[in-house]
Image 1 (cartoon, rainbow, N blue to C red):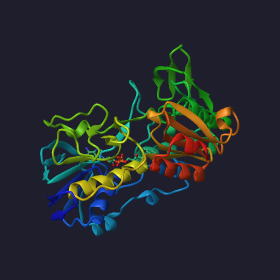
Image 2: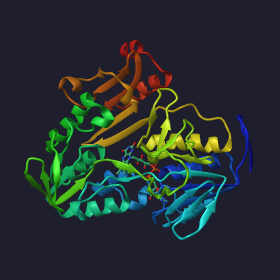
Image 3: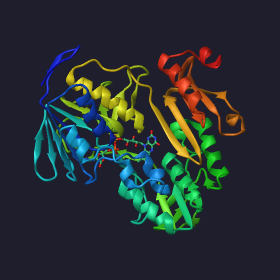
Image 4: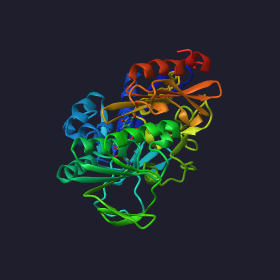
Length: 403
Ligand SMILES: Cc1cc2nc3c(=O)[nH]c(=O)nc-3n(C[C@H](O)[C@H](O)[C@H](O)COP(=O)(O)OP(=O)(O)OC[C@H]3O[C@@H](n4cnc5c(N)ncnc54)[C@H](O)[C@@H]3O)c2cc1C
C-alpha cells in the first residue's frame, strides 16, 4: 500500500504487531482507521483472545464480572479487522525487518510494532504459591484463593496492591499491607498525595505497615521482616511493580532497554529502523517536558497507538496527549493527569484531604515553577476533567489557582 501522508510517502505491505494486549489491539484498530488495507499479523504469547487488564484487580477479583466481559476483541472482531493472528506463540527474536516466533517461523515485515507490555516483578526467593497479578490466569487464581481465605498479606502498597486490598476487604478478609516507602503510591503520586492513599487503606481497616523492609520468605504464607519478625496470612500477594517485556528481543540490534525500549517522541525504537513500540514496554521521549517516560497507563497506551499507526503510514500525528490514569479502590476513583514526576510543588485545589480532612473530594495541583504539570483527584471526576483541559492548554499557575 502507498500512503500519501502529509509528511511523506511510505510503502507498507505488512505490519507485524508483537503483543496482543491493549497496545497491540489498539495499534491494529488505528492502522485500519487510518485506511491501511495491507497485511497485519498480530502475535500474542497468551492463548486467550486479547483482554483488558484494569478489571483484573477490580471486577474480576470481586466476582462482579465474568472473564468474557473483559475481552477486547473476539475472533469475529479480529476477522473483521482482517488480522492474521498467532496466539499462544511467543515471539522470541527481532531482526532488522523480521520477527522470529517460538515455533520456528519468521514473519518478515515493513513495520514492526513491539507491544509486549510488562510482567509482574517477583521478589528474590519468591516461593511458588505466592501470588502476583498481571494476567487473567493470575487474577482467576487469586480470586479462587481469596474465596477460601480469612486473611491476605500484600507486599507493596502501589495501585495494584491497594486495589487487591480493597477487593479483599469487600470480601471481609483481614488485610495487612507492607510498604518499604514512607507512603503508598509514592512513585505515581508523590509523597504529599500518597498520604491520602495511606488514609484510604487504614480507614478501610487495612493494617498498613509503612517503612517496612522485607528480608525474605519463610514459605508461601509467611514473610520475614528485616528485624526478624515473621508475618503470616492465608494468601500472600506481591505487588511491587512491573518489568517491561524486553527479554524476548534477543537481537543484534543496538537497542537501549535500560527502562523499557527507548523510543523517540513518535514511538520509533532508537537503533532499529522500521520498529516502533507502544504501551508498558515503551519509554518515549517527551518533546514538551524533556526526558523519557515509560507509562503504565491504559489511556497512554491508546494515545501512543494512535501516534504509531499514523507514523507508520506517514500521516500527521495527533496533538500530544496528556498522560492519564485512574484507580478504583475503597469506593473512590483516584485520577491523575499530567506528569507529577517533573513537579517541584503540590498545592490543594479543592477539599481538605491534604490538611488531614476527608479524602473524598480532594484535588491537588502539581507545579514546576509556574507551569501546571499535573492534577490528582479523589472522587472528584468533574474537577479532574476541568483541570485536564487546563493541562492540555498549558495553563499557568495563576490561572489554575484562580479556579
Ligand atoms: C491488574 C492491573 C490493573 C490495572 N489497572 C489500571 C487502571 O485502573 N488504570 C490504568 O490507567 N491502568 C491500569 N493498568 C495498566 C494497563 O492495563 C496497562 O497499562 C496496559 O494493559 C498496557 O498495555 P500493553 O499492551 O502495553 O501491555 P499488556 O496489556 O501487558 O499486553 C502485552 C501483551 O503482550 C504479550 N506478550 C508478552 N511477551 C510476548 C512475546 N514475546 N510474544 C508475544 N506476545 C507477548 C503478553 O502476553 C500480553 O498479552 C492495570 C494493569 C494491571 C495488570
